[in-house]
Structure formats: C-alpha cells, structure tokens
Image (tube, rainbow, N blue to C red; front, side):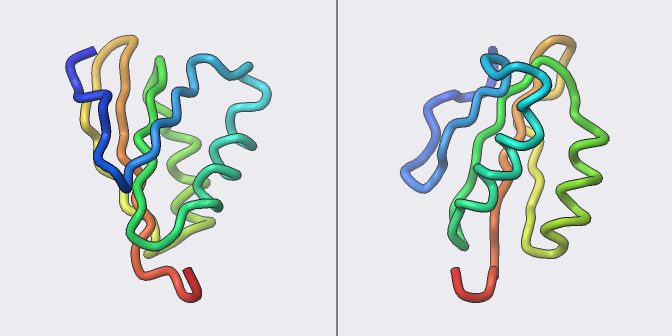
Length: 88
C-alpha cells in the first residue's frame, strides 16, 4: 500500500478488508457515527465503495468529508472526516 497507514492523532484506522462483507456497511456506519467533530476515519478497502459513499452522503450530508488517499486496483484508502457536527 502506498498511502501512509500511520494516521495522525485524531485519525482512526478502519481496515474493512478483515470484516465479513455482510457486516461491512453496518460496521462502517457505526464507526463513523462514533466520530466526534474534527476526527477522521482512515478507511482501507479492497475496492472503491461507490454505493456506500452515496449512502454515507445521504446519512451524514454536509458533515462528512471524503478524501481519497489512494485509489487503485485492489487498494483504496479514504479519509472520512466529520466536521461541524452539532453537539459533537
């Protein structure tokens, strides 16, 4: 993997490759829901999760940032950030 997998202090690593496919979306939604405003989840996956991104945008709206760190065949790294979330 080319992207830096040692994230900053307010960045939490989430490697989806070790989670059974049928549990992945639930686990990702749960992890993102646990983030506080200003925190980031570095998401590592084996494919580009376009349907998931649409679901996340619908659920988190303007509070979610999506920053691709790596986007290649067999390795996708995305930083999901939570910003400006009320009460977080």
